[in-house]
Image 1 (cartoon, helix red, strand yellow):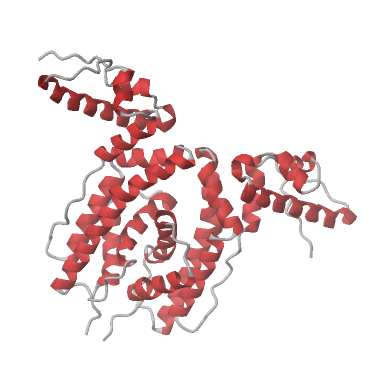
Image 2 (tube, rainbow over the protein chains, first blue to last red):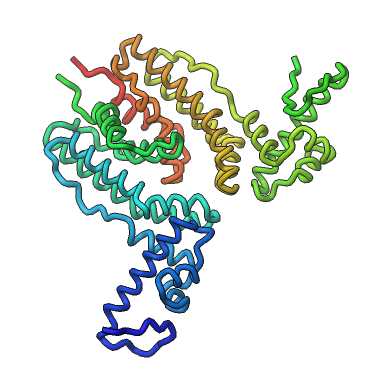
Length: 208
Length: 208
């Protein structure tokens, strides 16, 4: 099926082009992610993205009025989703596996792109992307942490009073801190260490 | 005893000018801090600082060849020092008091100036100031945390195996994270909550 990539047409699309629209959009978003990882926020241009996606500038602008809009959606759709925390049989395993998922999101191409974007762009734009981290990574992770803790309380491997708001922040806080301050890359061994030496002592019931 | 903080002078100073030199330098550094808090990194100029300190531009440049040098020293000398962690009788009190000191440093005028500078300046310069946070705030705080933990182990209110590197990062990590992600201002009550609901469970001995 030959379809036109014309960027100008405002005329209604025939049904046969609808899939093409989504495919084109995905191509543009991927091109934006690729540009972010090569030339960064400052080097990214709508023209460059369009060229990379083998389309015209107008096709990009029609869907995304600004660079921020485009990059925000590229990152958002690129970041992994956090639906539920699987039950691995113990709070230790649940925490370890969830930690690895968070680590993978942080160090994924979109995750790294997101953090480098925040580093490069001006304060106002950074606020918007900051919100993206919050909504797209932090809040889901915290929700899943709470699920893991609740399950642990039910199993009996977490103390019943471990429901404090701050408790579920410890994992994410440590990951950000050691990444930013110590340049840590959070290997699997680092994650195991954090779970075993910090989270488990924090959460386990007092032995009777 | 008046001591000079001059970074440039290799020549011997006449005794009668030594006090003036230090006083002038302090005035310039204070002017730099003041400029940072009003017009920020971008608005700060060597001329503006000189005018504020009621001196000439050359007096500033002679001691600090660049804006980064000047601001780095202004922040460095402005941040509180962390010599030792006083013994307050229990690990809970020791942690709480140390936490408040760290909070005060983070939210002091130089502390806020430091963080806003990192926010505003380019990536290369930010690295340098990042190093300043590391050396001037993080490393001393971590050292004091270790002291508090060791003392607690000796007293018996901290478990003997709480000597992991990651354990002493939890406090600083939580402070940075909740400040950055949640916009927390770390009130005394927040600090008490963190100590009582996170640090104490993490550190206390298993009850026998």
